[in-house]
Image (cartoon, rainbow, N blue to C red):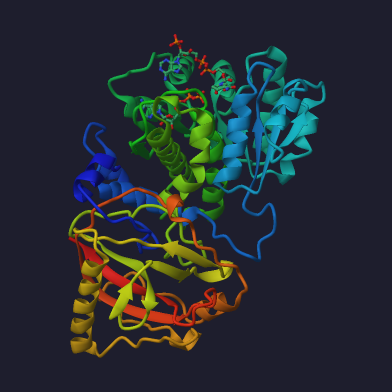
Length: 530
Ligand SMILES: NC(=O)C1=CN([C@@H]2O[C@H](COP(=O)(O)OP(=O)(O)OC[C@H]3O[C@@H](n4cnc5c(N)ncnc54)[C@H](OP(=O)(O)O)[C@@H]3O)[C@@H](O)[C@H]2O)[C@@H](O)CC1
Ligand SMILES: Nc1ncnc2c1ncn2[C@@H]1O[C@H](COP(=O)(O)OP(=O)(O)OP(=O)(O)O)[C@@H](O)[C@H]1O
């Protein structure tokens, strides 16, 4: 697992504010390989471990697509909330939506329901949990739900816990993935048989909840010296349910495999972070099980999902803390879910139509990986000789979404100078021309035929910059293209010391500008981080 410090060391000091797409391998290495490197716990994790595990998560994220209908990306149910705790189920349910579920239901008590509804019109809130017919009321919805999150803000009222017991039994019968957190874990500690052997369950205990479970199930208090072993033992004793022990590092195990997540978070421990995690995990668990071990290279989908949710929560914490410091609350973290998700799990080079995210350049280890990036230019697009001005790219996304992602990619190399970059591009261009003939520029209206399949260097993970035809469709799709105000651009700066390997350029008249001389274009560059 990566430490950001490690990444920071590799990129220290500087200056690329960019959105560059990481052309990572479609499938990462087998999780076993990651796991083998992930322990012992006290060893520092490398960027490669981090990237490998994150890549497995990326593999299970479904593409956004025009042909999909509402609900296909996930319908999640949160069972929890009581008059005292209305925030927790809200945090979990809204997090599920923001991670990408289409619909998020909350099953709560009659008193808590209007309060939770009042927080958000986006949640579907059922005031049923304290009703005598609670189990049947929830059961009616189960066929439509892809995952349940049980416990946030539930409290410990006996009637509610009894109802939740019935809901758990009904959900298990239907094979629904269940994330159990907070007071749901209290219930499990009282009656471990409830989830014994149910391998679609994920438990997400904090320190106290873990100790309680360990005592109940293993008869031991927590062995703080060997968290990995404790988590593994608890998981095994429960029949290989997945356990996520949250803490300074999150330790995840299904009894066989184990993984740690030490993604940089923040020092702020405000309440609600666990709710964000459990709601996010509900969605990721559904996606991962749907994708299956094929997409996780044979490894446990729930382990991968849990890792993804931990990394995401911690990334939200980190981003929120950068903005709000000590004042950070769970809501601030939830607002970061979109950008954090993009940063960790979406790449503009994704073959499945994901719109390019905003975010920082994710740098690989020095000297090891090859990347593809897209550098925008305005001015005379083409052979790269007249560049300057705003550095804006219309970058076609791929696949079904057919949207044009407008990216403002500001690239500074060392001196924060575009000119340095373009000198590099020209230099590489000359080398490429010498070796293989010129890249063919186009300043015409872009059509599929104008796409320049610049030769990817040997071993490139993508054969050509983007699929033929997509650009022309994108240009004609009538989407309105707005320039993102600069102020909204991410301010993250990272240093890239790169060697450019190859590039190709395309350009066309800018259909969104009244100035006839204004062209826009993009260049795909393959480069290596030194
Ligand atoms: N806005 C809302 O509606 C929110 C509602 N929430 C809901 O509240 C309900 C109760 O959940 P809970 O976590 O407060 O109860 P529980 O597990 O009994 O802990 C009690 C005590 O254990 C300790 N302690 C806790 N963590 C620890 C750690 N890592 N390491 C060490 N010690 C630790 C700490 O003890 P202290 O330090 O105070 O002595 C703590 O006070 C539950 O339904 C939840 O969903 C929350 O989601 C937040 C937002
Ligand atoms: N010391 C820490 N350093 C960094 N991240 C942490 C630390 N402790 C917990 N976290 C992260 O915070 C998130 C929530 O964990 P936490 O232990 O706060 O859960 P919780 O007590 O169940 O939360 P809630 O307040 O929602 O009930 C997890 O993603 C975890 O990785």
